[in-house]
Length: 196
Image (cartoon, rainbow, N blue to C red):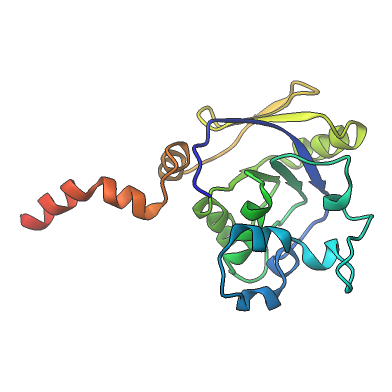
Protein backbone atom coordinates (compact mmCIF):
# COMPACT_ATOMS: atom_id res chain seq x y z
CA UNK A 1 0.00 0.00 0.00
CA UNK A 2 1.39 3.39 -0.97
CA UNK A 3 1.77 5.57 2.09
CA UNK A 4 3.99 8.45 3.13
CA UNK A 5 6.64 7.54 5.67
CA UNK A 6 7.72 10.02 8.30
CA UNK A 7 7.88 9.04 11.98
CA UNK A 8 6.40 5.69 12.93
CA UNK A 9 5.87 5.07 16.64
CA UNK A 10 4.38 1.72 17.50
CA UNK A 11 4.34 -1.34 19.68
CA UNK A 12 6.09 -4.33 18.13
CA UNK A 13 5.56 -7.97 17.25
CA UNK A 14 8.63 -10.04 18.23
CA UNK A 15 9.81 -12.92 16.07
CA UNK A 16 13.14 -13.90 17.64
CA UNK A 17 13.95 -16.57 15.06
CA UNK A 18 17.00 -16.52 12.78
CA UNK A 19 17.09 -17.48 9.10
CA UNK A 20 13.38 -16.96 8.48
CA UNK A 21 13.09 -17.63 4.77
CA UNK A 22 10.52 -16.47 2.26
CA UNK A 23 8.80 -19.88 2.19
CA UNK A 24 8.09 -19.49 5.89
CA UNK A 25 6.91 -15.91 5.35
CA UNK A 26 4.51 -16.98 2.58
CA UNK A 27 4.44 -20.68 1.60
CA UNK A 28 5.02 -21.56 -2.06
CA UNK A 29 1.47 -22.79 -2.62
CA UNK A 30 0.24 -19.19 -2.39
CA UNK A 31 2.42 -18.09 -5.31
CA UNK A 32 -0.21 -19.53 -7.66
CA UNK A 33 -2.78 -17.01 -6.46
CA UNK A 34 -4.41 -14.96 -9.19
CA UNK A 35 -4.92 -11.98 -6.90
CA UNK A 36 -2.63 -9.39 -5.45
CA UNK A 37 -5.12 -8.38 -2.78
CA UNK A 38 -3.18 -7.23 0.26
CA UNK A 39 -5.68 -8.83 2.61
CA UNK A 40 -5.24 -12.25 0.95
CA UNK A 41 -1.48 -12.28 1.41
CA UNK A 42 -1.68 -10.64 4.84
CA UNK A 43 -4.07 -13.33 6.05
CA UNK A 44 -1.55 -15.96 4.95
CA UNK A 45 1.58 -14.36 6.42
CA UNK A 46 3.50 -17.12 8.24
CA UNK A 47 0.59 -19.40 7.31
CA UNK A 48 2.08 -22.73 8.41
CA UNK A 49 3.36 -21.31 11.70
CA UNK A 50 0.17 -19.40 12.35
CA UNK A 51 -2.53 -21.97 11.58
CA UNK A 52 -3.18 -25.67 12.10
CA UNK A 53 -3.96 -27.78 9.00
CA UNK A 54 -7.69 -27.37 9.74
CA UNK A 55 -7.34 -23.56 9.64
CA UNK A 56 -7.63 -22.95 13.36
CA UNK A 57 -5.09 -20.51 14.84
CA UNK A 58 -2.10 -21.92 16.72
CA UNK A 59 -2.41 -20.30 20.13
CA UNK A 60 1.34 -20.26 20.78
CA UNK A 61 2.31 -18.30 17.63
CA UNK A 62 3.06 -14.63 18.19
CA UNK A 63 0.60 -13.26 15.59
CA UNK A 64 -2.17 -15.07 17.47
CA UNK A 65 -1.06 -13.73 20.86
CA UNK A 66 -3.30 -10.79 21.88
CA UNK A 67 -0.46 -9.27 23.92
CA UNK A 68 1.41 -8.31 20.76
CA UNK A 69 0.50 -6.02 17.91
CA UNK A 70 1.60 -2.94 16.04
CA UNK A 71 3.14 -1.80 12.80
CA UNK A 72 6.68 -2.99 13.55
CA UNK A 73 7.93 -6.57 13.23
CA UNK A 74 11.16 -7.26 15.11
CA UNK A 75 12.81 -10.31 13.56
CA UNK A 76 15.93 -12.38 14.10
CA UNK A 77 19.06 -12.27 11.97
CA UNK A 78 18.97 -13.15 8.25
CA UNK A 79 15.33 -12.32 7.67
CA UNK A 80 13.93 -13.05 4.19
CA UNK A 81 16.53 -15.52 2.98
CA UNK A 82 15.70 -18.16 0.38
CA UNK A 83 13.81 -17.43 -2.82
CA UNK A 84 13.35 -13.99 -4.34
CA UNK A 85 9.53 -14.13 -4.24
CA UNK A 86 8.03 -10.67 -3.94
CA UNK A 87 4.94 -12.27 -2.41
CA UNK A 88 6.78 -12.35 0.93
CA UNK A 89 6.92 -8.55 0.99
CA UNK A 90 3.27 -8.41 -0.14
CA UNK A 91 2.31 -10.59 2.84
CA UNK A 92 4.21 -8.43 5.33
CA UNK A 93 2.65 -5.25 3.94
CA UNK A 94 -0.77 -6.90 3.67
CA UNK A 95 -0.70 -7.82 7.33
CA UNK A 96 -0.13 -4.18 8.21
CA UNK A 97 3.55 -4.01 9.06
CA UNK A 98 5.26 -0.79 7.98
CA UNK A 99 8.68 -1.62 9.41
CA UNK A 100 10.74 -4.77 9.90
CA UNK A 101 13.73 -4.49 12.23
CA UNK A 102 16.52 -7.08 12.10
CA UNK A 103 20.29 -7.26 12.33
CA UNK A 104 20.54 -8.63 8.77
CA UNK A 105 18.25 -9.00 5.74
CA UNK A 106 18.68 -11.02 2.58
CA UNK A 107 19.40 -8.40 -0.12
CA UNK A 108 16.62 -9.30 -2.56
CA UNK A 109 14.01 -9.47 0.18
CA UNK A 110 15.21 -6.16 1.60
CA UNK A 111 14.68 -4.50 -1.79
CA UNK A 112 11.31 -6.20 -2.23
CA UNK A 113 10.21 -4.74 1.09
CA UNK A 114 11.30 -1.24 0.04
CA UNK A 115 9.45 -1.61 -3.28
CA UNK A 116 6.28 -2.52 -1.39
CA UNK A 117 6.32 0.27 1.21
CA UNK A 118 7.79 -1.74 4.06
CA UNK A 119 10.92 -0.24 5.62
CA UNK A 120 13.67 -2.75 6.50
CA UNK A 121 15.74 -1.31 9.37
CA UNK A 122 19.14 -2.91 10.05
CA UNK A 123 20.39 -2.58 13.63
CA UNK A 124 23.32 -4.03 15.55
CA UNK A 125 22.88 -7.47 17.17
CA UNK A 126 23.15 -5.77 20.57
CA UNK A 127 20.34 -3.31 19.82
CA UNK A 128 18.19 -6.13 18.43
CA UNK A 129 18.74 -8.19 21.60
CA UNK A 130 17.75 -5.16 23.68
CA UNK A 131 14.55 -4.74 21.67
CA UNK A 132 13.60 -8.39 22.19
CA UNK A 133 14.26 -8.09 25.93
CA UNK A 134 12.23 -4.87 26.15
CA UNK A 135 9.25 -6.35 24.28
CA UNK A 136 9.42 -9.53 26.39
CA UNK A 137 9.32 -7.44 29.59
CA UNK A 138 6.54 -5.16 28.31
CA UNK A 139 4.55 -6.00 25.17
CA UNK A 140 3.21 -2.42 25.20
CA UNK A 141 6.71 -0.91 24.88
CA UNK A 142 7.07 1.30 21.83
CA UNK A 143 9.73 1.92 19.23
CA UNK A 144 10.08 5.09 17.18
CA UNK A 145 11.40 4.92 13.62
CA UNK A 146 12.30 8.38 12.34
CA UNK A 147 12.63 8.08 8.57
CA UNK A 148 13.78 11.68 7.86
CA UNK A 149 16.62 11.36 10.39
CA UNK A 150 17.16 7.63 9.81
CA UNK A 151 17.09 6.68 13.48
CA UNK A 152 15.36 3.97 15.46
CA UNK A 153 14.75 4.46 19.18
CA UNK A 154 13.73 2.07 21.91
CA UNK A 155 11.45 4.43 23.84
CA UNK A 156 11.61 2.25 26.96
CA UNK A 157 15.39 2.67 27.31
CA UNK A 158 16.01 5.80 25.27
CA UNK A 159 18.68 3.97 23.29
CA UNK A 160 18.86 4.90 19.63
CA UNK A 161 20.71 3.79 16.51
CA UNK A 162 21.06 5.16 13.00
CA UNK A 163 20.15 3.03 10.00
CA UNK A 164 21.12 3.21 6.35
CA UNK A 165 18.57 4.04 3.68
CA UNK A 166 19.23 4.66 0.00
CA UNK A 167 18.49 8.33 -0.79
CA UNK A 168 16.25 7.45 -3.75
CA UNK A 169 14.20 4.94 -1.76
CA UNK A 170 13.98 7.39 1.14
CA UNK A 171 12.57 10.04 -1.21
CA UNK A 172 10.07 7.53 -2.61
CA UNK A 173 8.94 6.35 0.84
CA UNK A 174 8.56 9.87 2.18
CA UNK A 175 6.49 10.89 -0.85
CA UNK A 176 4.49 7.65 -1.33
CA UNK A 177 5.99 7.06 -4.77
CA UNK A 178 6.76 3.77 -6.42
CA UNK A 179 9.27 3.58 -9.29
CA UNK A 180 6.62 4.29 -11.95
CA UNK A 181 5.28 7.29 -10.02
CA UNK A 182 8.81 8.65 -9.78
CA UNK A 183 9.40 8.23 -13.50
CA UNK A 184 6.13 9.97 -14.30
CA UNK A 185 7.26 12.93 -12.22
CA UNK A 186 10.32 13.12 -14.46
CA UNK A 187 8.24 12.97 -17.66
CA UNK A 188 9.11 16.48 -18.87
CA UNK A 189 12.81 15.96 -18.25
CA UNK A 190 12.71 12.61 -20.03
CA UNK A 191 10.87 14.09 -23.02
CA UNK A 192 13.32 17.00 -23.19
CA UNK A 193 16.24 14.56 -23.14
CA UNK A 194 14.65 12.43 -25.88
CA UNK A 195 14.22 15.49 -28.09
CA UNK A 196 17.95 16.22 -27.97
